[in-house]
Length: 407
Image (cartoon, rainbow, N blue to C red; front, side):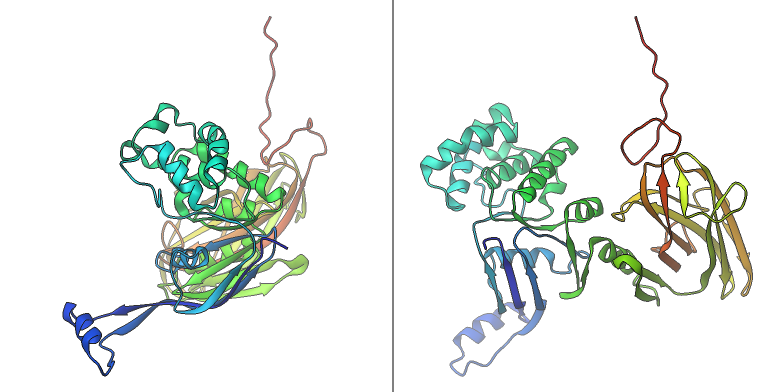
């Protein structure tokens, strides 16, 4: 079946020479004595992507994401391992890659289409659709050197997706440009997915990964550090953002296939996390718009100058719905002593749409957990929202409106 990607023991090493003459000396030396050292950008990467599956690749800058995609698409040669792809591949990697700045957009589109394997007549047949999707107007016949970065992305994406490929590979290029075209592009990607296209996407956009992908891969320092559901991988990645601290990161399998990630230095830890009604009863089911209270209790394990407590409500895909903390609310605790218990109540109306939600809680020493993460606990609790007495509506938020007919 077309669309399968198999990556086996893939690695990429670059040679590092101590000075500019070392390369020449190595080349001229008949004994073949190496004058370089190797720096591995990627090493030992193994994974499969099934036909029709969507897989996201995430990682910090320098983790090797773009290098991996270049080897998968064949624009870079691996040092070790191999890649096998079944079917026709369309790739959108570096911004405007392959476009000649002095040629017009139309000329570049023709050349790019032929590089994708189309015959000249096929490119001409697809050109009206390419123009219509790119929406760059008369610039189609202007040199690409006068294009903005967003216009280059529009044209490159339009060419790459003019006809549905078996495999679509997208790097961070879609993060450039206006919101309108990003929405339009992701709509086309979703359409391709429904028709069976295999998708491999690199993005720092958590919502894009979690809404489109079936699975995610996390690269760390050139190695495949973790793979799993987008929610679990994103939670783990969030923990790594504070990796410069002496923190521990653990993951525990929960019911219904969920994975809970807990990270932090444990200078302070959560002892209680409850969702309560106005009457103080613990809740697992909440009505739309119901007044609720999130009650948390933290115990300090060391003397702390500042203790900030926060929470984040996430939808069933793990995407943030709302979050805040006591730093932003102007009520962080100060001069907390070891062994002291600090409790907070966050009162709010559950103005959420019907569905399943989770709450992540965090305690840290600054405005965010990145600087001083004492404990971040995903899936601290899970609750459901039902609509028992409100007019029917759709979406993730309840925004009651009062219609007025105007004569």
